[in-house]
Image 1 (tube, rainbow, N blue to C red):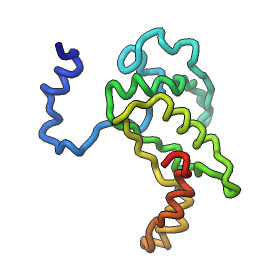
Image 2 (cartoon, one colour):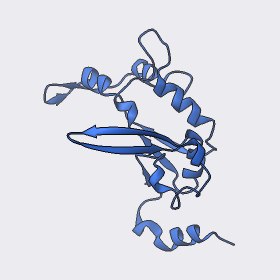
Image 3 (cartoon, rainbow, N blue to C red):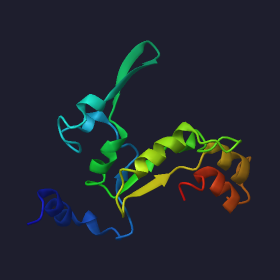
Image 4 (cartoon, rainbow, N blue to C red):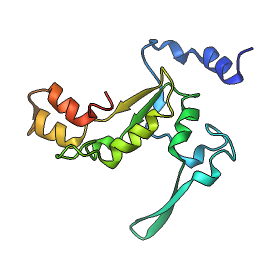
Amino acid sequence: MAKPTETAVKRFLYRGLHSNILIGTASDRYAGWIGQIYSEGRYEKGITRRSHKVGDKTFNEETLPVESVSEYFEHFPLLEIDYTFYRLLLEKNGKPTQNFNVLKNYRQHMKEGDLFLLKVPQVIIARKLRRGPRFVGKLQQKEAIEFFGEGLL
């Protein structure tokens, strides 16, 4: 018997979109999705909390633990990771950054068929592809390996 979610997805049919068009989100560990994407009570002990101040207002952010990605992939086949835009995966000396280690941790909670879309870091795009208002050159394999690290390819 199909799950109610599967039935709803099949009924919607993504309005005739090509089967290679995948739907996902640019965030996955958002605690606000508990009860919608994530099971209630499952991650309560692992939620991290921090405050941000913007102007004169403060807001709180609650983030689920990395292992929640396995439940995310029960709903979506694709997850965009946008924080890779802001920081490389490897330091110049080849040492893994925090981003690399988080992605390595994600890999432990993925199953075959789960997909990530990683944003190329701005330092690569700015230095390698964009010159003024025009794009020149292209991302070479060497830069891709520097970005992804051989351990993630």
